[in-house]
Image (cartoon, rainbow, N blue to C red; front, top):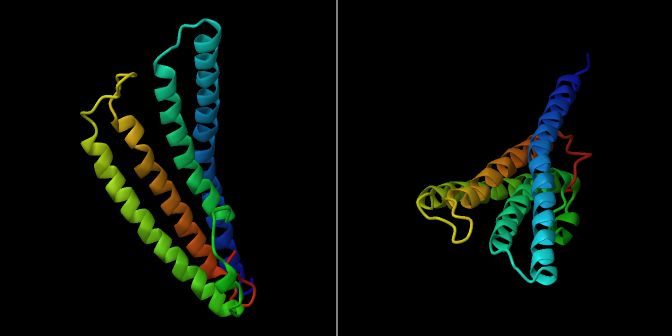
Length: 174
């Protein structure tokens, strides 16, 4: 067993855990997008064909969209699909680029912690509020932020682990 073998095994474990977290977000995200689409279609049919709008369709689709978009954040982190400004980082030599990527991800992790913690308290404070048309507790829609924040924090930790384990010669800020 070479010196890099335990590192590669650990990196594969991190990648597997990241895939599990991604699926944990992807499955409900797909379900929510499907439900949102169906609800919007039903709302349009009732409004324009039967001339009898259903009041709750807009609110339900809005909350499903919030959940789907929030969960999608964590799915984009490991794939590097979020908007970024790489022109400054790309001119750095690979070892410094790697350190810059680690620093940026630490800053993202801090932001996600603040978002998750504040989102948690916002959801808790909204538990006694009721949505106007659906009549459900607002905790269900507000919980999207801390749940998505937790998943995004996990993905950022996995990404940091992979950046730290990567060879300084090969790594980039991707």
